[in-house]
Structure formats: C-alpha cells, structure tokens
Length: 270
Image (tube, rainbow, N blue to C red; front, side, top):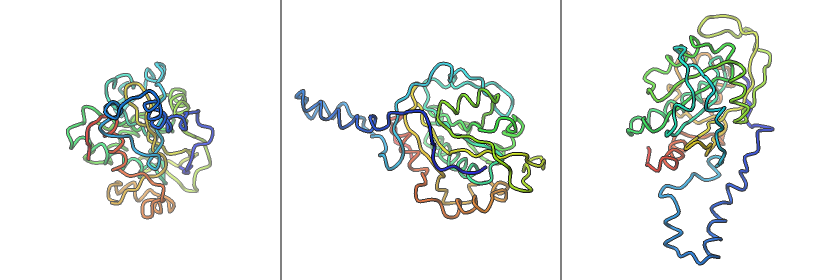
C-alpha cells in the first residue's frame, strides 16, 4: 500500500462553517440578551477536540449507507444500522498494506481496548473496513484480526462486495487507486505473489446519532512498536518502519481518539 497523506476531491463537509458554529452561537447569545448561565447550560460538559486534533463535521449517514451488507471474518453479514444508538469509529484498512495500515490498526485496537477497560465497550463500536475487498476475503480479514492478540470484542474487521465497499468509501471521501505492487511482494498469510497494490488515504471517522461528527487523518503515533503484531512488523516496508519509528509531526494519537469519544459520549474515557 502506498500511503497518501491527504484526500483530494473528497465530498464537501462544510468544515469551515462547522468550525465557526460555536463562535456564531456565542455572538447570537449576546445579541439576544442570553445570560451567561443560559449559554453555559447549552455547552456540553466535555467539549469537542480542537481543529489541531482533527476535523469536526456534521453530515447525516444516509439509509443506503447504513444498510450496505458488509461481512466479518466468519462471513456473517454486518450492517452499520445494527449499531444504532452506539458511537461508531470507522477506519479504512487493508490487510496487505506494508506502510501504514498495521500501524493504523494498532492505534484503533489500543483505543478500543481502552474504551473496553473503562466499561464503555457497549457504547462504542470500532469497525476497520477494507479498501481492498477483492483480496480481503473473510478468511484473510479473520487472519488479520487474529494477529492482534487480545483485541477487544468491540473491534471488528469487515469486507464486502467491491461495489458496496466502493460506495461506502466514496461517501466518506477516502481516496483509493490501484497501483503496481512492489517487486517480490507477497501475501503474508498465503505466500501468493501480489499482482497489484492500492494507494489510499488514511482516516478514522467518528459517527454518532446517525451523523458523521469528527475525522482524524494520517498515520497515528504508536509509541510502543510491539502494539503492531510481529508478523506485520516484519511485513512493513522501509517506509512503514520509518512511520513506526519516527511518526510524522501531524500524527494523531490514542489520547486524541479517546478525547473525541469522550466528547461524543459525554463520558470521560482514558
């Protein structure tokens, strides 16, 4: 997988307007004579993370999206609609990625484990969904999940038909493009020679109450390399090892993901 740091041409999110909403609300409160106590009551006890962390959005998840039939490692059908009432953390991944996905997944799994340890596993579901459904069969994603030993039950790896997966990621604005594979690249599980690679962007989408609410972008900072399974650490390219050892200055962190979930659930998660 060739990492793409940003998403050109993603769908409009009105992020500038969303970012200005708190300021506009405060100005309107002043103009209408709203007292400090009323304004304070309207603010959530746990505020949203700042723009230095990620992008706050407010986009409805359409019915066709939540009804898409995805599949887990056992071949069971899973739909986003099944998690109504929960906060969803949706990340794009690819089991044959040699640069960023094993690191992304390690951070997602660590976040899920921290949520479970805080007793909130029933309120937050983590879904890592492939961008490579042709090769990420149920057997392949089951093998990938198994590598993350001790991962909590509130984290799932999902695949689906190429058309359904393409529709899902097009909605979220995830960039995907087939490219030539690295010479000699093979499937770490089967040993089969790879005939293509997939360049894609890296995002984590936080959804609640039927809305997309927040996005973290880029490669995360995973301070403990052992969080990435040994087999996948060995599978990383030199670029991937560089990301693990020297994460970019723009990397998101597990504490930032937890801060986002604390805001969405209005419950302190650490």
